[in-house]
Length: 347
Image (cartoon, rainbow, N blue to C red):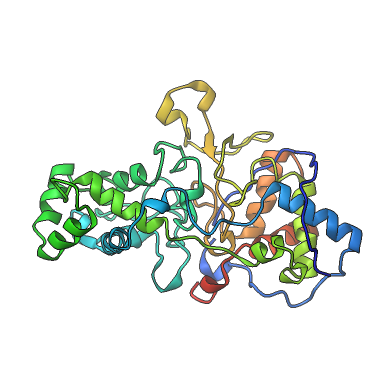
């Protein structure tokens, strides 16, 4: 059955949060070997209406991309891949957020090593679809992709460059960049600036729109999702994951307390470290679930290896629910349908 039109439906919003990521060997298979019984026509119509109201299809372009020129994007991609942005010439943006060879925007490590070789404090989230989020970083300390791009280069635990001026001097001394910056920023007196470096990287990141079969489903083709995946979507909604994991990216649009119902053991204070407001203690940006089946391990600390475990733990900590194995499997089956088909084979 193909649903010809999807209308907004009134949806009861429940409470829920699910985290992101798991090592490659633990990533569930993207194909379903044994399908479930199909939904009835009425159930399928209702589910389609709910999904359209809650999520919708991923837009073709990210906000701000209308001002990005091909020259700016090309420069941004070159900078994103350039290890010379790090103090030891060994770290690039792509070192922790791998997007080349159609990979999923992460390194599949619990926490990523910086230029000094020490692992960071938080899991590196995927950069795919990142520009659709309302803020960047787990604690929301960057308002957009430009602000985010400025952070890791100077972070002592990441790329560890000593200052903005040092970055400008290093990149400005590289001959092949002179013409590229001049072309990308034709109206700027000082094309090679730290802000322009971040601006170019952000322009490239805005091209990393990563759709899935779910978007084909939302546009009216029920067959784009298997029966098991549709039932998983239904379980995802009915379980209560939808309060936080809504919108086209299934998250990334709000903060939520980790351990909302049952405490989660962590020394990370979350957004409190940024605001110093006690109300922000243990508050983290809700992660997006697009490509979640490819971006293990999960949670801000990268402590959870499998998607099934992540679903089970979040149901307990955020909802106070102990899901059955079948419920966990059903939700995880649906979440794997949010993976970009073009990137599955590379992960």
